[in-house]
Image 1: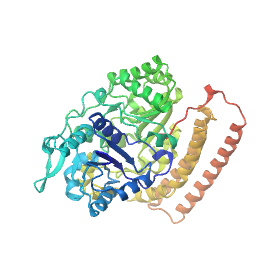
Image 2: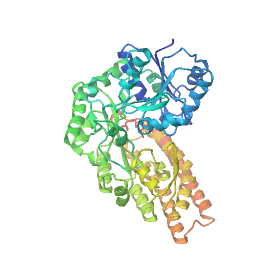
Image 3: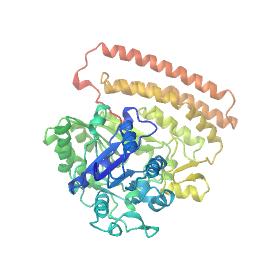
Image 4: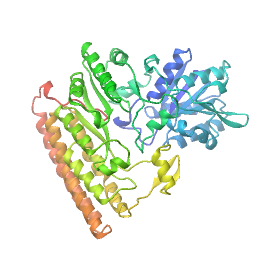
Length: 522
C-alpha cells in the first residue's frame, strides 16, 4: 500500500500561470488531521502537477490506498467523476469520497448522479475523513460518522450533520506538501486564520456552506496561534509573504477588529519582517485598525465590492452602500495599502442606468482591475440567488452549471460587447500588474498609471452603452468601432508602459519608496 489516504485535485482548464498556482488548503488540513491520528497520506494536486496526477491515475492498483478523497466544485465534479469512472472500469474498488461546498449542499444528489463515488462529506471534513478511515479499517461504523452521506443497504443514507469546529486553535496546522511547488511558481503560502462569514449575500455560498452544520457562525483563531503558523512557515520554507484565504479576515464587530489588531501586534512584538494580504468587507476598513496592520506588513486588501449602484447592492443583500466602498478605498489608498476588488458588472436584473453607475464608480475609484469591466454574475448552487432565479424561471441547466437570461433584452447587446473585449482588458491589466510587481515604481506612480489605463476603456464603453440604449439595439458598425477604439487605447497605454519601464530601470529607487509586491491577489 502506498498510503492509507490519497487526496487528489484534478487539473483544470488553466493549469499554467501564477494566479492559479495556489495551495488547496482543504486537502492540506485533511492530511494534517489524518497524519496526527497515525494514518499515512499522499497529496497530488493536478493544478500544480498535472503530469504526476495523470501518471498516478494511470498506474493505480486496487490495493494502493484505503481511501481516495476529492474536493468537488460545480466546475470540476464532472471531471472528477470521469476520472474515477475510468479507474472503476479498470477494477478499482477503493472507497472514494468527495467533499467541499458542493458535497455539503448536494451530497445525496451527487451520489445519485455519480455512482462512481461511495460517499460525500458535508461541512468541515478534517475529522470526518479520519473517522471514515477508521471505519474502512473496521474500527467504527459509517453510520456513526456525523456529516457523512454514504451508500448503505442499496440506498443512500445521510447521517446527521457534524457541528463546525468550535476552537480552531486545536486543529493542527495544514500539511504543506505542495507549498514548494507554489513557491516555485512565484506565489506565497495561504493561511486560514478564520472560518465562516456572518454576511448573507444573495449570490454567495459561503454562509450556506457553514450554516448547513451547527455552529456555522464566523470563528477566528487566536492571534498567537496564527502568528505561530507564520513563524513556522518562515522557519521551514524561508518565506516572508503570506495571503490570508479567510472569507472575512476582519470578522464581525469589535471583537473581530480586536483580533486583527492582535495579529498585527503579535507580528510587531516578534519583530517579524513580513508582508501579507487579506480579504474583508468595505465597512470593516477603519483607518486606525488598518494603520496598525500596515505597520505589521499588510500590503493589499481584497474586497467584494460587486457594484457601484446602491439598488444593486441592496438586491445582492451586501449590507453595504457605495459610500462604504468609496470610503474604504480612500482609506487604503491614503495608507498606501493596495486595494483589489471583486465586481459584478452584469447580473440578470442589470439596467442601462446600473451600467453607467458602475462605469462611473470604476472611473472614480481609479484603482479597480480593468478586468472588472467583463464580469458576469455566477449562480452558485445552494445560494438564495439560485432559489430565486429558479422560482422565476430565469435559469437553464442544473446544479452543476447554470445559465441565466437578462430581464432587459437590451443588456444582451451590452454584455456581448463588453465580453468580446475581455481579452484586451486582460492584456492591459496583466502588463500593468507586471510592472507593479517589479517594485520599480512608487505607490503614487502606480495609481496614476492605473487611472490612465482605466480611463479610455471606460469612456469608450460608456459611449457604447448610451448608443445601444438610444438605438434600442447594437448598430452594425458599433462593435467594430468599439473594438478599434479599444485597440488604439490599449496600444497607447502599452507604449506608455514601455516608456515608464525604460525610465524606471534607469533610476535607483530607495527600498522605502518601492511599492510592496501585490502578489497574485492583485
